[in-house]
Image (cartoon, rainbow, N blue to C red; front, top):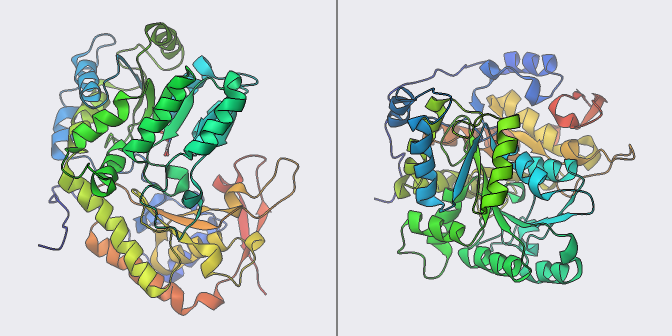
Length: 456
Ligand SMILES: Cc1ncc(COP(=O)(O)O)c(C=O)c1O
């Protein structure tokens, strides 16, 4: 059959709120045109993030009931640890409440003044943790990764030449090399196995540890299987094992490819570092056999890690994004291609070219998607990155709108509905107006700032 269907049926349903356009216009005014300030009960299709928003399976909910809440040595931990080690053969696995806690620990171990951490692209919490330690993060994603129209199959790859040149000059300041799979900040684009292995080789040649930010490891492995020469007949598990067996450790947000609503971990091989990390874990998260999670969360993750490597699930997941990207592309909506693993990215600056970047075309599109169709998306552009440390404002390199797909949550008809809402936007594109910010906090303004719609 040519239709790739949702490889599950629905056992429990969660009603979503149907509202009218007039009601949504009122809700937008109340939220000062900031979608983060909308109560989720007023959102019809919530594509704000794929993090922790997925649906757990019947088997995961059953595992929740087997959770053992003992402070130390709970069997839930050992089931979780075994599930992680089955895919990522690291010696030590330290559970954390989510990914950023693992990043904070990693940077306590490796960060510090005068240090520089290379990555393909640091995710924002990774960068924040690098910088909080006094270090600096540098990004070496390949040039195609910054070109919305490039059809390179692995747009998340590290630029090996630039990394090599950087290491030759600055290796004394580099405590470790990181690689993010898939590259979230670059549109959920994958990294090839060959590239992962080549980055590992460079790191080890300079005697530096190599750590993977593995949040979307299964989606990445799916793209390796589909697109990389010689990988097509291998199992997802084997590809995942190969990705991680050339690394010295990893950070993980299990809210993505752990198929959990909460959770994460730091894993590593070095015994001494692991001892230091455990001391940190006890101080900040909890005892090493629960580390910030309940036993029931650990059990849900142990099952989620088995389900996420299912090829039918991964094919359906990738197809949902590709389907929306193909349809939007055919309508003439500028989208980042090829579709990424967890989200669809729309180039709002190109589509709403009548709106100046400093009048936030991404926000104009995101609020219109909400007003017309109740869809919540996320501006990734000048609202998020425009304010400079000297107080001035500059257009961000791109004004994108991200539609992130929660896992196993929405169906094909939800995807069709999203496409229809874009058709409605297209009809009134030139009527869309820019916005201005009337109130903003000193940092991370996109979460709480208030907007006003420009009238002329
Ligand atoms: C690539 C990447 N790294 C790290 C994180 C941080 O994980 P968490 O939100 O669980 O703290 C995220 C979350 O979106 C991510 O996408």
